Amino acid sequence: MIVVVSIVALMVGISYPSISSGLDSIRMSSATGSVASFLNAAVTHAQRRQQAVELVVSFKDHALYQYTNEPGYQKELKLPDGILIEAVLPDENQVRGDDRRFMLMPGGAAPGIGIQLMNTRDGHRLVRLDPMTGYPRVEAATAR
Image 1: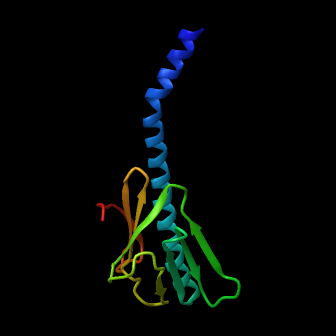
Image 2: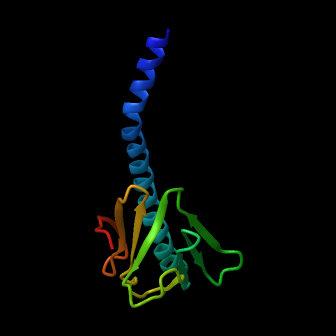
Image 3: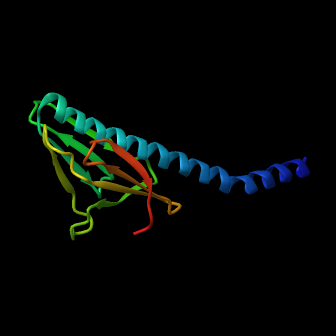
């Protein structure tokens, strides 16, 4: 019985790093997809409702927010545990940790912003909002 338990413990010990890495990869993929959908929803809301949408990226909360003049309209996207907002591009000499605010205007071009995410295993992804099409796209990013 001790031999069987030690073999199982050895197998678990060997496979744990790869399982943990796989979970981090899934969290990163899910977070980038959620951020891309959130940005797309903000652009779509501004165009279809003909209302300005304020997009707030909060470093300290690791969250994104949408606000409009429509009563009661507020959307929030909290990133999963282990996923952090590393940077918001363009950098424009912002103080690290301050919230970044963007306005999406109806009929106007989408701002060319990028939200760089980072996980605990030093993985990086960049979700960039294309100013020409207004659609977000996910790119591999380098460490800042």
